[in-house]
Amino acid sequence: MKKNTLLLLLILCIHLPVFASEQSTITYTLSTITELAKETVAKKIATSPNANPNAKVNIIPQSLEGRLTPPACYPPLSVAMASDRPINRTNTVKISCISPDYDYPWQMYLSVKVEVMYPVVTAIGIIEKGELITPEAIEINYVDQHSIRGQFFSDTSNIIGTRSKRRVAAKAPLLNNNLCFVCKGDSVSIYAKTNSFEIKTAGEALRDGNIGDAIRVRNANSNRRLDVIVTGVGEVEVRM
Image (tube, rainbow, N blue to C red; front, side):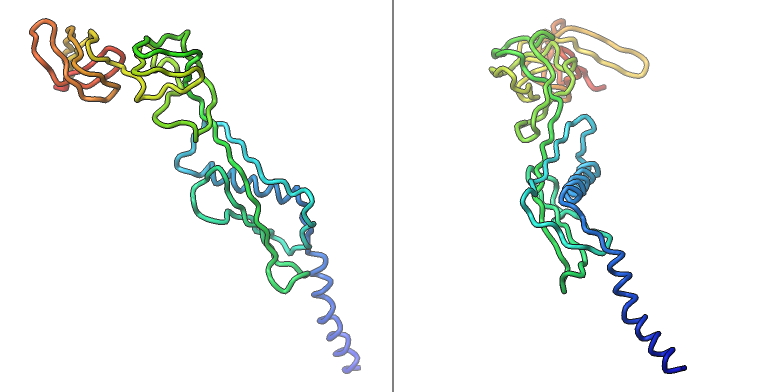
């Protein structure tokens, strides 16, 4: 009796893990793997310190059409970026699992393209050098991040009244270094402010400047030259 019991237990110990393993494996479809790869890249983008909530992001995994069906896997399926580098135009996702079909971990690599489009103020038509920027001359378009070479604007109201420092092609972004909020020779409003009072006078800009730039102006009343900070279109402030 004892021999029969031991024999039965031995048989169960040999066969039960096989049955359990077969029942716990999953064969992931290529479409599922593609979606998991997209989710992995999207998560990487969302957690990036440079993530822009206003950007449009297109994530395009490579086509797996014609590829062999992945083997049965013991869950979970591992899906991770193949490297720690920042998201770029082309990225690689590593997919892997433990499979009863192999003596080693099964894995595959999937290429994923990423297009990040920012809302950018662009020229409707050609804007000539020295031209005043008006609401009729500009619009918002989504532009690929790799096509932007400088500080851009996402709100048309931010640059109304500025002037172009160089010719801007139609549909091209209007960048900070292409504009002057205060241009040399412009009449400007000069402010001097404290907690208790504010003085405003007129003057002339002696050089170009954008918001935050330090420039020199000439006071129209006293003819004195002053060091000021550009605070807006045609406006500067003397720091007290």
